[in-house]
Image 1 (cartoon, one colour):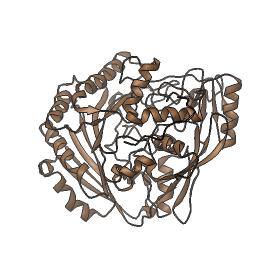
Image 2: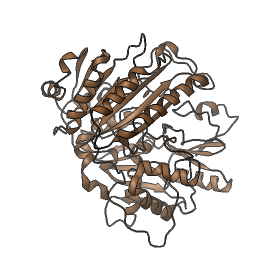
Image 3: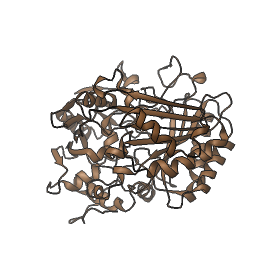
Image 4: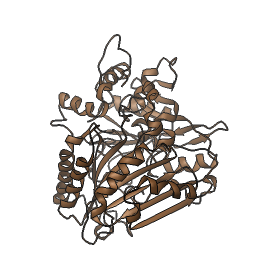
Length: 505
């Protein structure tokens, strides 16, 4: 185990996390290469009475993978990706999605990961995990067969996704409750389907603000409900800044199949707006095992763009500057940002879309930031009701999820930070009549008043887990009754002698 402390030459670099809005100074950062190192780190934290934060890659949007005067248990060196001939893969919690995709494609398999190459597997899986192949394969956690975890008591156990496993409740909880709650998961075993075909991506953009509403209505009416599971897409609507290269609306996605098939399919899914698109592109991605750059197969330019290139300045201490325009926030540069998320209520319709367009179109100009709303298509295999037995992810019946996003470059600009934070808050509030719940992979601590109080935290977590919250507290009580793994949005334990069965929605 290798530990970094204040005063070490690497400390300022190593304490950085992906959201540069936070400038935490942990007491110690322990890099663990295996489960034995994790046990040693946890015991050291107990001995020194340090609070613990678990960091796979540092991409927790609310910064809860670090903190002041804490021990960070860093898993980035547990980055193995081992695929056998049957498509079973052991993947370390610290493996980047880029390395996982590349390895499994080379083995003739398909992985249901996320859309950012520098994100690590550990946090993605435990939050559920949405990605470019989710309609065909389900959430990332839906392909999980087993995992290895170090508990608060220091036990190393292997948990399997079978009802006969004595730790079945723990498997259910880890699949969707978010990382850091029940222990330190070091490795995941996935059951990956065979893939020996081709992949194709597409992008359609509309620069004219008049088409923003019609495009959103077209997308929500067709893409999430289409019977073709091989196509997973997103729609993005942005504030229109003077001189910005961003289109008013984007529809893009990935298709497990060839370009001619996709070219015939997509126009019918946008029957009212396709012919008005400013630009349409199809990008064939040939045999996966021959990909020269694996990111082309999952990381889309429009999925999560970074701050405007013209205003990039130092984004962390010590100063780190970025050369050239930031094509994506998925490339390892820590930008300050704020996100929030929700799901549509059943009555979500044209009036909700009008509210979105009105808010975006009337937002005051903010040339030093990028602000937008992303829609992620769901349905398909994600909607399989049988998965409720294996995963605590509650909102499977939703057609899509919404993610509010604001990204800027200078965390030291307090006025800009406040304006971006307020923009997210007002947008989310304006959409309350049309939305509910939230997605733990896109966390927002500010959904409820007073989240720092015990009752405020419970009210906040019910937004993410709904009726599964009480069973999750009982599972927490079984595996961490002392709440050793406690953080701002951590699940509190409910200790009971005979916890009831896991809830199903």
